[in-house]
Amino acid sequence: MSQVGAATARCELPVPSCDFVPDSIATATGHETTSTATAWCLFQLGQHSDIQSRLRAELSTLDSTPSMEQLNSLAFLEAVVRETLRINSVVQNSVRVAVQDDSIPLSAPVVDRNGTLRTEIKSVLSLKEHRYPTPLISHHQSR
Image 1: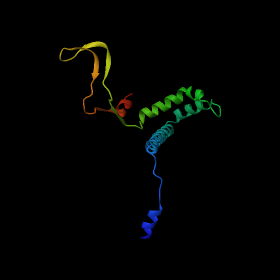
Image 2: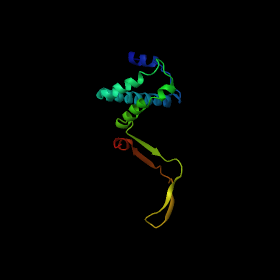
Image 3: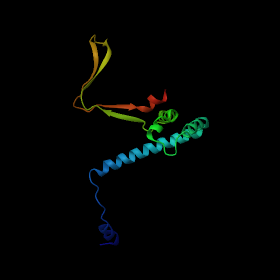
Image 4: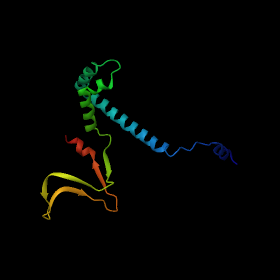
């Protein structure tokens, strides 16, 4: 056996359990989106010193270790985070998959192009999976 083959034979890595892989993916995904959103927020604050000053003033009203209740009461911080996520969406789109038949009630009945009175919009699944891509960026940029 060659030296490489012998070294490979001695290297026994533990095989992850079935639960390990999805947990790792979820952790990595959450970490990446959170850090990207934070980076965009810091970038935007660096570009807008007036907003940064106003946010600093609001944050300076907190204790050194604020409670979640205190953090949740910061209206301007909430606005900054929401605006950052609106302008610099970390997730560009989302694919939604219908898993069961569904219907959406209408506030007022309508007549469709075939002359049928409709009181709800029905979604009926066929044998094929229906995917509905939702481009989030187009929804957020226009507001």
